[in-house]
Image: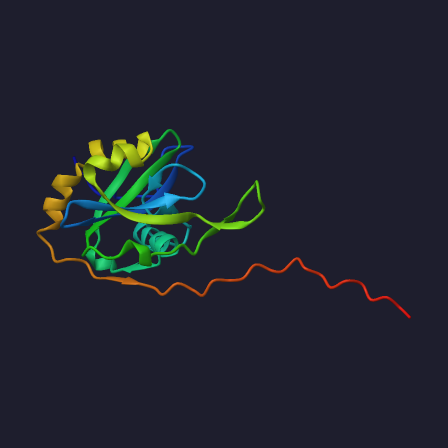
Length: 190
């Protein structure tokens, strides 16, 4: 069942936060997912909204930061606000895109790993997954959103009534070398 877009997307019940993201489907009946660094599950490109952006702007920004994908705002279908977790709701948008090489995607956003102290990307892998693979790849809560609340086959049928959305993958920045910890030996005075 598709939810109607919320008229006031940021008017949430007390204590709830909003995460905005995209559902990208292709004509092969696959969904694009991102592997969450340090975890054993895959997720949608999504994240928090800032006070100065709309839910669509937040979803497109988070997608660019987590995948390097630039998407057209006009091609997005607003799926509205959906229940997700006890304290978080999702505002999702969807588009039908051509199947592209997910190996071209990359993540700009980073976090400090508590164990190593290294700055790691939020997402460390990308792939196209068949709808029936979602319960194995995603968390139980995200699987419930994607399979029970959205009905991905029906969503893809609806998206097929519109042209394919154009996607542009930004080039990944050159790899940064880690700063060297090597220090020259102390000079001995003569």
